[in-house]
Figure 1 (cartoon, each protein chain N blue to C red):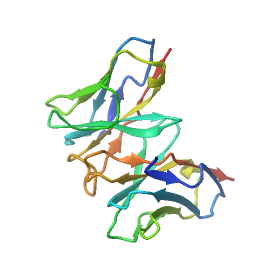
Figure 2: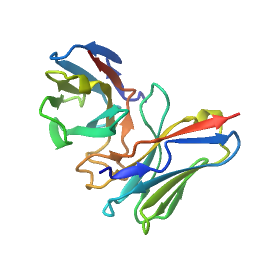
Figure 3: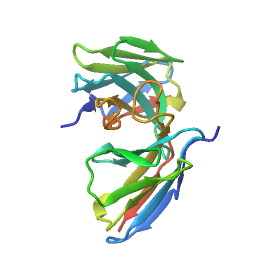
Length: 113
Length: 116
């Protein structure tokens, strides 16, 4: 089965609201997680990462939360803007870098004006 | 600093043909990884090259191969194309091999391959 997955294929939010994108992973040995953003016609763009020894990490308008107990990862985007519209993927490194990154199927974030 | 570049951006081939895709990593990056992206399977790891050697390989048939040159540029080749090979092929570069903190993978725009 899929190692990393997302709960919702599509998420629609109002411009200015906060967005929360969720991800569940199954490999408890994973020690590194990344969120990527992919806009139409482009490759994935790195947003933020977190190591398994952390619970939270903040970037510019984004926060990643990691709950190892339930193997859950989330990406919070503050004050969502039209430019945030994209597909968001969580990815994990479960093989110490030996097997590349394992990606979830993605959540399409739609911004309503 | 220029990002990862991939050529060509679009490609149409027919079944049975072979194809070669090219990737130029970010200057100074020595690791190049390739991924296949399809609507059904999502993003899947193909292989990684570092110092001109394939270091890791995903679960893909032997028709998928690659190489890396001394300047870190990489090519991937798919022989005997099948309809199911239609996909977006993404290349990612990083400073060091493998994934993990300090080894962020930066992706190119991809090559969209259509097999007819």
